[in-house]
Image (cartoon, rainbow, N blue to C red; front, side, top):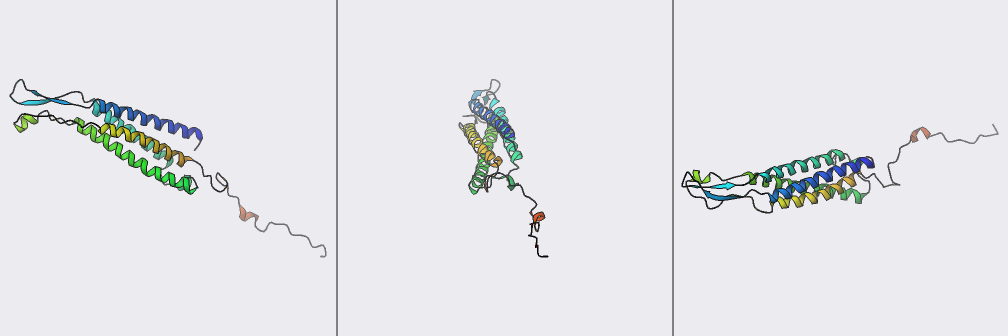
Length: 199
């Protein structure tokens, strides 16, 4: 993989992660909140909620993060093609560690974004009617769920870049670079022998 291709992929991945981070922060700031209000046509109370923009932001961040992760794994062929891994044991170990933790942080971030979006979209507007009782409070997403997802997005980006860079780095062991194999078999027995002048 050329240097230009590597930089291009890293730029796209960084953009997608940063955009997902901004959306996650926006989702935290626009969390849906509800307040108990009396029904003007009934004696029961109900929950009145504001905008659901947080759910849209959260799901958009979820999709962008997934796209970025798949892009890197497709570019590096995950860990299925061992010949592209750097030859030194140190770089190979760092690649495996980065691979494991970038997937771990990815799953945590996606779980926070998906759970936050689902919980934010859950409204208890008509609970008062079905339960035949007045509402005391309204269900709402706790603070910090999208913030945790945003933090995991940044950590995931750092680990993903580390994994991609180590994965795309050419082998440097045994003299550096790839060794071109020559047809040694053709050279067997081709050495010159001295001519016996006494014959």
